[in-house]
Image 1 (cartoon, rainbow, N blue to C red):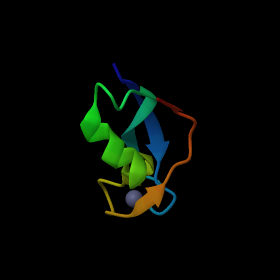
Image 2: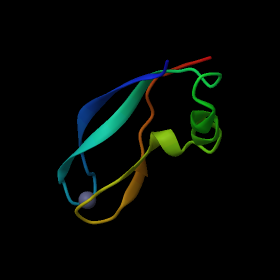
Image 3: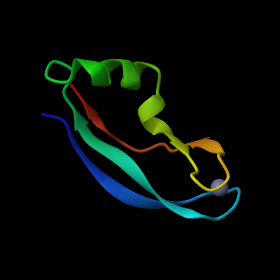
Image 4: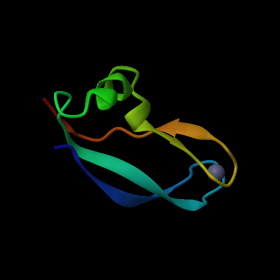
Length: 64
Ligand SMILES: [Zn+2]
């Protein structure tokens, strides 16, 4: 099973603090819908709920 947790991130554009879902481990065999999100990197993208700015967060994730 894929594991994830929520972390606080601060928008570099408007400094609004929001919740971001970080994936600790992704098992694409059990979560095939996650495979596409990894491939198109959308799991690393955060959209600020305040200003709508999208930016990329790089973090380590276990992909198997
Ligand atoms: Zn913002």
